[in-house]
Length: 147
Image: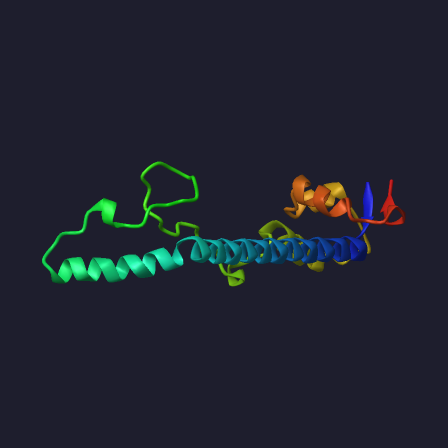
């Protein structure tokens, strides 16, 4: 099967941009969930912890040890005798995004090809895997494929 080289490059770049858009959406969703969880935790436990801190300082100044029972209990129903702590993981920053190595290599390797038409066999000879080719070919318009 032969493919139009420029169409393959365009399709690979489209796949890279879709991958980035998916990552951006995922990072945004995680950040929103984290913010919502933080707001909910503050609404449920914030005042209780402020009161507990005042009480705990008084206990410490009076030379009294702090016991688990002195700490605010979690009222979210997530466990028996659990302390009310915020244990939601901070989402990774968007800067951690790295584009697919296979697709970036695919675009670079296709840039070295001089022919306008390339076969799947010749693409495999220069190191393009079937998986990355399949990922890109799905995005091609049918008129760019020659059999």
